[in-house]
Image (cartoon, rainbow, N blue to C red; front, top):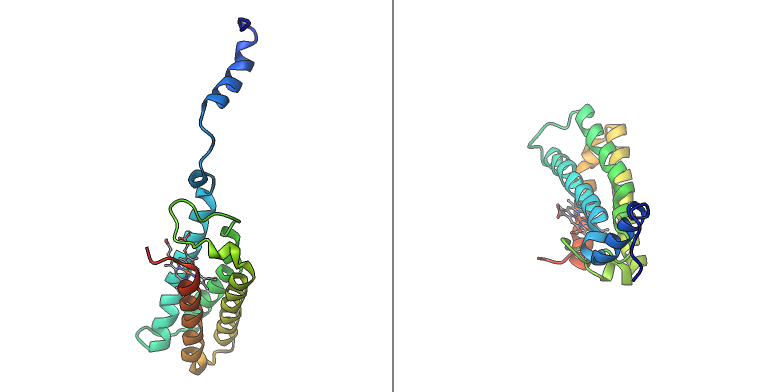
Length: 154
Ligand code: HEC
């Protein structure tokens, strides 16, 4: 092997180091999208729980708060798919590999949730809160359907 001149060292060293490091594992490669979608789900749960409590009458459904939660859910529903990067079922995640094998079905379930959120937003804007209970119950079904099919229990 040729000796590496002092001058070339700063250029060659990073190359040698990069080579010496193990290839990036699947779990670190997908760390960011996994964190992203879990954050979106955590936020969805927070706002969904609040609207759910409003539908049950355990907290007041003031127009201001209902609109705030409904607008946020609508936005989160639109972001929902962004974190589901192809093949990111390895690592600290409960996403099942079926998501990418049956992408059309998964996307359809996300779209059903988007439609629920859009309806909720419309109800919040119109102030027709008597329709809240039915809308929340439809949304609950969308969460459950998707979790049953695409989220592993542990
Ligand atoms: C289109 C499918 C889909 C819909 C709809 C959906 N989820 Fe999820 N959810 C998932 C998947 C997949 C995961 C697993 C994500 C992971 O571990 O990477 C998940 C994870 C979660 C988590 C755990 C997050 C974490 O930090 O591990 C919560 C909480 C959650 N969902 C709440 C909800 C609620 C509440 C609703 C409805 C208001 C909902 N989800 C609707 C697919 C969905």
